[in-house]
Amino acid sequence: MGIGNGAISPYDSFIYADYLYEAGLIDDIYRDEFLEMEDEFKRLIEAEESLEAEELTDAEVAAALLAMGCTNTLDFTQCHSDPEESNYADYVSLDSTRVAAHTGDIVFGGQSDTVYDLLYEDIPKSARPQLEALLENDYRVRELDHCQTFAYNG
Image (cartoon, rainbow, N blue to C red; front, side, top):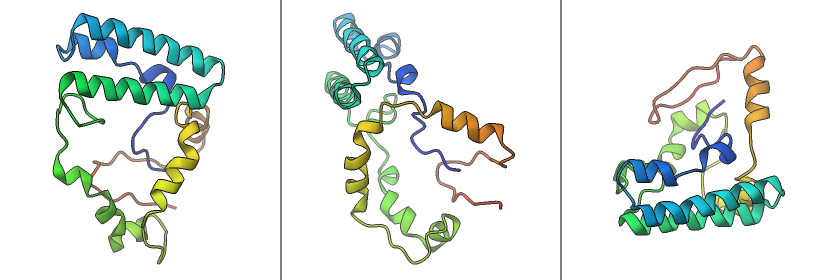
């Protein structure tokens, strides 16, 4: 099992307004605007309007980055991404990564955009029940640094 961008329960984790405000990254005007967006995001999830919910959270993140003058969508405390974190395609193309992920000779390519587009509406849906089911079984799991290759322990 590998967890990349750990958004297990977007309903509970796609909430940025208070965090960004308390960290001094946005002012109270932006905080209030983002709080309204987050209330609407939760309402959309409850109404099972996933596409609209994802579009709204994308809009909030874009507005937050613009307000802060930043580009890093995964870590607001680091305004700009470390160039080494954009080498995902290189990482998944390594022989050691392909062996660990059991992908054989399949080479990583542009299919990522297709997968993202097809799963876009699923992003705000909770994966908590699936994660809990996995954790309740007898799977061996170990925590790895984001730069390490994961391995299946059989």
